[in-house]
Image 1 (cartoon, rainbow, N blue to C red):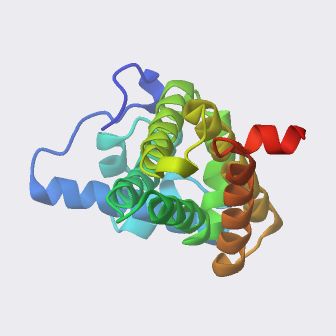
Image 2: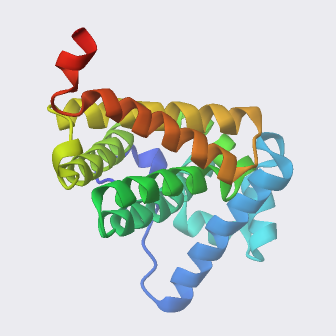
Length: 213
């Protein structure tokens, strides 16, 4: 669901009221994704998207006031997939397993469609989506906090700070891999997992004294 505080230029003109309209909107958003993947920003126009979607450009403008609103809808769609995966990770059998699934979700978010993810990362910074990005980050941090709480004796003394650090580590590594054009998801997942669990190891209760000795 789009943010009610989102800039009017980024809001859909109207919500589809019928199944057929919803299918048209979904088709337009997927066409936008494909145009970005195939042609990059240079070829990303509303005319190109409408043609790819098989609709008239007037139909596109019935739902989106411009290209930025379409891009925001695409970012929202991709983020929803990530958040669904995060919710699934929270249902894992253990906190540690949930963290591994969370890492897998973050890597998949970047690697599922890597060219698209790189471009949307750029657009997410360009467009005025700070509130929405902040809410997603908070949602991810709280998921990590809840998973850490299930790790019993392995949970750090300050799980909120640890969650913020872990999110920064994961995001930094995944975004950098995307910018480099990496495509080996298994390799990236393994490296991020080692970094995250390596970060946690010294934070286990009772480890501070051992480190200072």
